Length: 133
Image (cartoon, rainbow, N blue to C red; front, side, top):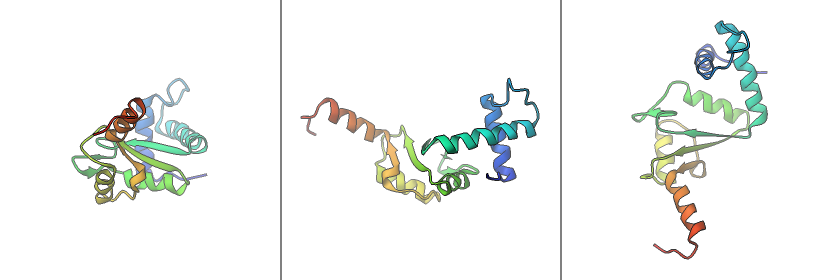
């Protein structure tokens, strides 16, 4: 069992309401949606070992960490979940993305940071194994 802080609860309720959680179940009040939200969160925590997060616009915007991101990531880590930070920004290496996140107060390791250039390099390597620079 877990307890959601009021600020996290209201953010989660808004997010899940926007996703339609509670719709079709007769849930119309914030308390009803919050109750459904707890069930959804509990299922996610039970069913998922790892979580992937898009970075720009999801975790931060214009170099500023968005509200509740740090505590949400800590919450997941406290439950033993693996976290990965992905971005379609190809101009940063894993190390640069990691440094950027750490500079905003997100504890992370290089192997958790996956900019799109990593996927591109992997694809080229698999499709053209003899390719050189």
